[in-house]
Each structure stands twice: as C-alpha cells, then as structure tokens.
Amino acid sequence: IPSTEEINHIKNIICIRLNVPEFKKITRTVLTDILSKKHEAPMSDEQIAAFKTALILLLMTKFLAPQTLLDNICPRYFMALKNLDDIPNWNWARYVVNDIIAAARALANKLTDDTKATYINRHVIFLQVFTLPNKIKFA
Image 1 (cartoon, rainbow, N blue to C red):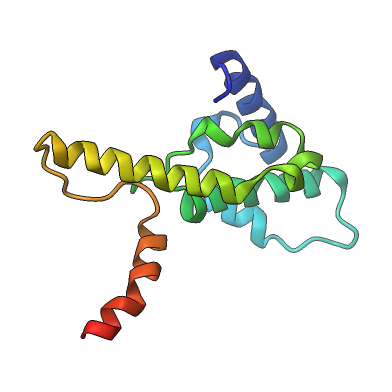
Image 2 (image 1 turned 90 degrees about the horizontal axis):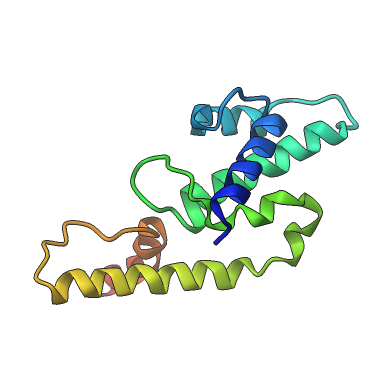
C-alpha cells in the first residue's frame, strides 16, 4: 500500500491524465467515456495514457477487485498507475487472489464475532459466476 503522500501524488497524475479537475470527480461515466471515445489513428501519447489509466481504474473498481457496491476507487493498486509502462510487469492475478482471500477472512471474522453479515465485500460478480454452475447442477 503506498503512503498517503504517494497516493496524493498518483491521484494528481491520474487527474492530469484523465483531464479531470479533482480526483473525486472521477466516476464510472468519466472512465467509460474515455474508453469509448473514437480517436483518429494514431492516438497521441496523452490519449494512450488516458485510455490505459481509465481501463485499469474501471477494471479494478468494477471487476477484478471491487471494494464496495459504490464506485469507490481503492488506492492499493495505484503504484501500477504511476508508470504505465510497468503495467504488464504487475502480477494482477496474485493481487485479485489476495483480495479474495482478504474478503473471505473479513467475512469469517464477521461471522465469528456474530456480526450480522448482510453481504460479501468485494468480488460479488466473480463469486456469482463461480457458483453459477453449481447452482444449475443442484437446481
């Protein structure tokens, strides 16, 4: 997990890349607009950087490691956004597996402490897709 100073620095970099005045203005709509924008070929370096940044933010927030049912962007993977050339060098599968393990531990702690667990944090889509074949089998 990056330090607070590093997170703020990377948030500024992200805002500049996405042409957004402040980090809290980055929404799913902003990200999908960047990803669906038609560009004249070839794309500029700035357009490529915006596309890569928006893609990572959307994939992590919505599919690979969602943190809540809201559109909150978690800073735990921000170091991967600092230098976009390093994106292929990050072990994204390990990150997702570790995040699933953390979610399972959090749920186990809630259940052990008799805390009412009304939902499972993170990876709801993954868990639904993973359990679907078993539900069909038993139906």
